Length: 357
Ligand code: NAD
Image (cartoon, rainbow, N blue to C red; front, side, top):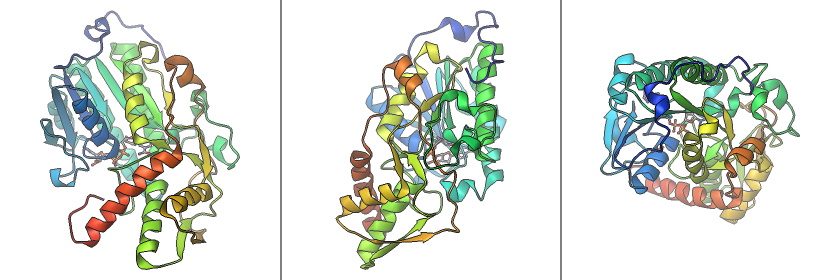
């Protein structure tokens, strides 16, 4: 794989390695970052699938969580502290670490220190999970861990897992992900903790950030179109020149993929792409959203705004080979649901009702 030094299986048979089973319905499952977008959706899915002991953790106060799932133990803890991670991991059988200080391009280009500090979360959380005797540990990495030299042109070759090395990750956020991936790999190699690492490519959908500076392009563009319609304006502002390309994965595919990856023994300590391979430009994205909204707007390009790499797509050869599966929700279908949800949030906010942004 891309990290050739990884010494798989050099440890003896540990407590964790002996148990290769999927979680029982009453095993304790811990989700961190559960007040956020993906952690919240993962928690809801685990609850709907019938898991009876779920503990969820986030540093945000409870009223600010995107989703609150009934019957789930909620803890408000800052997981950059070791003691809090120990409390969070107590008795856990599976740990899903989705906590990170992150946002869209506007956030990760401006606040690299905040992004780098997330290394404390994974560093303490993986140790706490190991000490608690957890069987499986999932880590949410990112396509930002890939070598940026391979992402200069909008006309990109899709990124395959080996493209992370030689390393030239996105400054701040991407390097934090790459280092945390290495922690996960070494906890398997040296200590026998089964770790699973997915490199998410842009995730979007309902119940995520849609305003306030941390939102990503799909949510931001939905909001701008909704706002333009509401205010009777015939234009929107677009960051960059609209030609940059990306792929976007719908949240339901992301949650499904996390479960498949975490329960595949062939993927222990092996970073894998979890993303859509439907490549579109920002202009294409706007066109789809306009189609959903039934409007056509003048596009005003802000060339001084943060724009990120020229192009990025997910090569899904490995996930198809290993899991016989890949994210398949079309961008049009996913955006229709996302647009409808943001429209509701926008109307609620306008009416003075509480929303979560
Ligand atoms: P999010 O910002 O909605 O959720 C992250 C949550 O982590 C937030 O609720 C935040 O309060 C919490 N958090 C931050 N610092 C914490 C701390 N010290 N202690 C406890 N909680 C803390 O982000 P998301 O989109 O749900 O992302 C989840 C994970 O997936 C992150 O690791 C992120 O880097 C990764 N990821 C997301 C995307 C995407 O497109 N959304 C892409 C690549 C990787």
